[in-house]
Image (tube, helix red, strand yellow):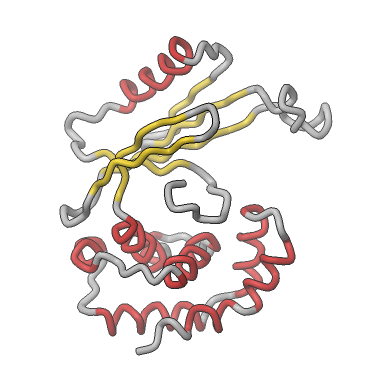
Length: 216
């Protein structure tokens, strides 16, 4: 959102620093009050999911926006928010302003170097966390960070995953890219971009795009 990453997101990922002081119910209550009292929007429905810190917000507005393609289709826009305890200490937070023609807000976020470190950790850790499929967005973001010449925060990365040095990291990433199923990558990216031809071209040339920038 703050660095113009050119893809749609699947959810909002928010980290909290102090686990002892964070309460999901309080956070949810604040969200509802914001929509009800500040924005005067009364149709919001909210629901926490299971034991994890996941919240689903339901906005019955798709028909009002002309986005409900038929009466059989749901008119509800779902927003998923994933909340997690921040990991490590060697990250840097920054305050950013986001403005549009009629709306502005401030956010405390990770630095772009920390975001790259977190993305690398996600690529490395997903298999060990029992997720059977790759996440196409992770590999698109990897190419985007490399194209932007961003260097990950290695101090922060080492707190998240056991990486000794840059050479070992590149070896791991090169192996994952070489073994990447491009059909799965394409299928995962299709819903995140308007231009299907771009996704096809991107996935067909993915290894050339990335491996050349992961030279050992």
